[in-house]
Length: 474
Image (cartoon, rainbow, N blue to C red; front, side, top):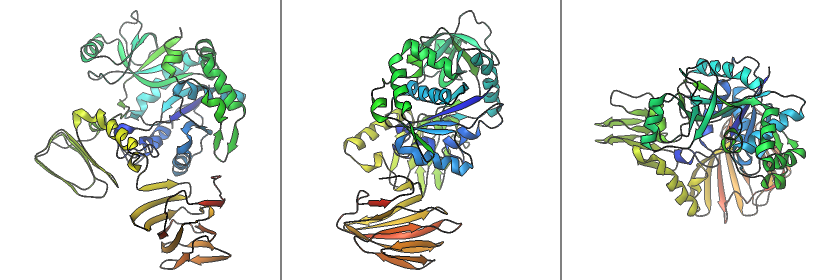
């Protein structure tokens, strides 16, 4: 039986600001090991029997980030479906199911979030193997996390009351889904042994999900059918009819289908799972020193305990503190009490209200051809460190308000400057006047790095007139 992994990658992870930003969210960050969370999700599938290439549902603005994750893993997605707007998980999975069925197949969908941690891969594989026969038989299976402590931040799943001696390796009918409880209720759930944390991971046949969606939320299915009926490929991506998809109701799989169907089943999963929904949850799963500190980067501690301290570039020194979150990014520093990390999202809301760039962007911005880091800026000037991947090229473009000076510091650059093509190597440079048509390419086999100095009356990214672009951008 074929399993089609469906990776949901539309989250913004605002509670993990300043590392996570709306245009570079947590699933694309290496928060728990050297791989990004997205890459961990993909590699976690290796070794599963009958597994196919993943299908990804992603935000339009994250499309090149998703493609880059697969390039770094030297793997290919079966498809990357781009949502023009977010409409929650029920429509997203409907798109995946419709895409699979339209291609003449009816696989079992394994629906996963791109930003979860699962420490015990073999236990995860075992749970998938247990769920597969039930899913193939028309059941809609969810994975319930065996709770390890009292938790009020998750929804819960109750297995049917007649299912005694619940254990891993079995499938149980779901009696009910319950909302996030208060502490007293959560303590009762934990003591009963009948409740599991709702992981948001699912397994069912594509056609079966569409049948239940038609029964309970036909408006969602109708809108998704219209949106994907006029899909058109764009490089690695599948684009939808934006107008049709915008009419789709916003609803989760839980509310739209799982809480209503008579065929909901749960497989217990005890595999070191976390949704890493906050800095405190990251501290929970991190390796700690003898004083309970989780440390990353250049950090010096004195009389410090039970804290998470992360440095990217600067030395962070602490004296006489405990139960703190301290994390530094390229343009912001967060200091928060560990028991108040849920309120980090309020900082993000304030940044958005003030239209500050720190809510959306890092100083370093990623593009399909590479990346640039804004090193310095001032009145009428800006300095960037640009990296271009081997074989990649920027768009053929011009600017109306700025001139540019490029200095190569590593690799070889093929530069179009007006009607000339020139080859630049390390320590060589060229000047691009205002209005000149130009392009930068990396013809080599290694990364090209250069320093770009911009000068002019306006230096915004929207002062780019693209004449020709390999990546289909306007």
